[in-house]
Image (cartoon, rainbow, N blue to C red; front, side, top):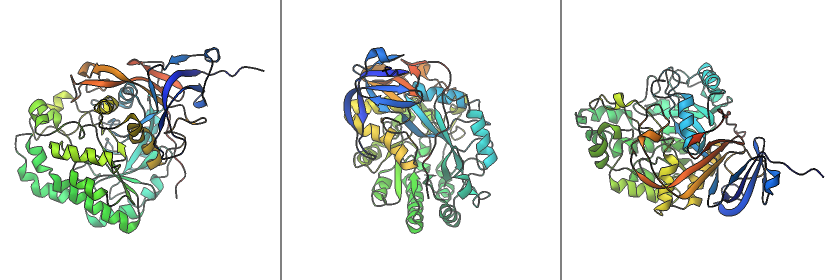
Length: 448
């Protein structure tokens, strides 16, 4: 009988495995054998049956980590980032799939815009990918068709301070937009009318950014969204939750809403971030004080927060160093998401099993990603290999993004992405890119 042969075997690693969907994974010491693009075997595999072996001793293997909120800036803003550099940063950071946001130039609001991004991505992206379509007044009647197109991960709504025409700020437009959608909708919750009302609070001091975009700006928008979501029986995903008040509100809307936090909001605090980094610490919604950080962590621990997303939003240092308020909001994050969260595992804020839910399983379950999110025979061979013991310093020189900076520069962390497998291919090992871009379009389960 011919012996089974595997293209890649990860030997003797602690694998995070769930026996059924939604279940918190457990660590299993085992081998993982890959044939082509699929996981072919979980169990003991002789080294003689492997064409390529990765020694997993002392390492943990997670299902491929998914970052469901990145801005890779292409087309139109390639001086900040493009699909190749952004996806390279992703896989160096252990991320195997990304959902890219629509506020490019032009914004992604039509089928032609989506197809253009898919054409640009083909053969150029190191990780797997899907793209959001942005809601606007001009495409509201087409959204139900657009959200079903291949390569689309859903519709993104900006309720406040967006780019160009991507703004759904009044109740009538918000209700109409939600009512026509079938898939879970991702939403940036900041109240535009309140932002305009509070704009005089902005001064030349970047610390006023948090005063201007205060708790009420976020909370009022989230309240409006959740009210309509329940009334219309529509599933929504609240992005980058930044306040304790929103956490408590979301705890009462689990029937219709899931929530995301960023590593930035779970790690950085105001006013310290502005004192240390100035306008480099500016993002929307803003970094808040420690009391909110602690309440966000309570939301993680109580499973009100379902997903950790980076909101990777790179700008050049030249742009970011403009005097406030002329400096743009946003910071890079796709490459640092995993190291920052692994350090929180080290600090015992959460377990590696809980982190696997937040960045691997839950994104796939919430958005209906097909054949990913779990280490199972027959599933896509997207894997994130991490060393929980490795101690490293995050530095600007390590960043693969075009912007070449991170708000976490010089932060010492425990836990590091050691290798990234995308579609059965080892594309990153020990910080080095291997081979050529291997990313493919993310596929989704059928939805009603």
